[in-house]
Picture 1 (cartoon, rainbow, N blue to C red):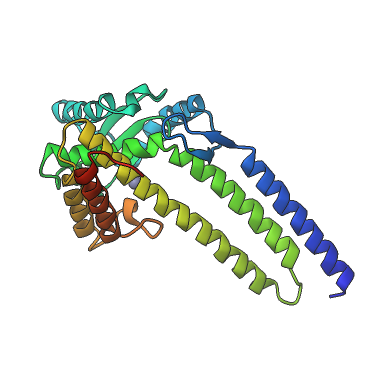
Picture 2 (tube, rainbow, N blue to C red):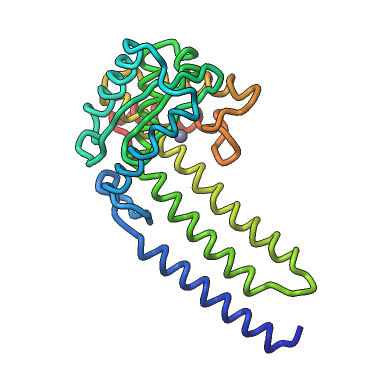
Length: 267
Ligand SMILES: [Zn+2]
């Protein structure tokens, strides 16, 4: 390929990368609860609306709502106890907790804006209310951390940079190579962020357990339950983008040791 074509591709690629980065940084907002600067694609109101809109489909994916109103109410009461004793109560989000009928899937998840779900498959493996509070507190942490809206902004950045890299490096004689590299880079970016979000949600979970007078050490039991469950088919909270349970346990222990020593949680 002649150098003029190469140079113009490179310049085009650089321009595309600058646009992608500019667009990403223009989405920067200060999280009102955590004080952390983060790029997010939605306003809190949009997060709430998106979560409410997708909640019924999400529930349908996991066998719909579990048909035992008493158990539904119990899950909701534990979730609301966690919310009402923490900073989450001061957030604009509308929290609600749903028990899903899927007995096989061992999972819990949060939609942006406060709709939180746990499968009956996971609930049945938990032995105490404290452990349930730990699972729900972790999910509340994903909402407060605005992890979905943040992940969307990151995905947009990744896609923008990928196109830029492909444009800059594409060589008609060696197209596969540059695409593979670009894809690898994109994957690494996404993976790192996913792991950090999980660890942040764990820390929120521990903090919220403490504030609601639950035993925070039982967050470790939750990790053990998930670790055992992952022995077979890995549940989605624990797929490749997530840190492995042993690493999470080590981080939780570190946070608890710090709390026992200083009386506060800082991270
Ligand atoms: Zn999580």
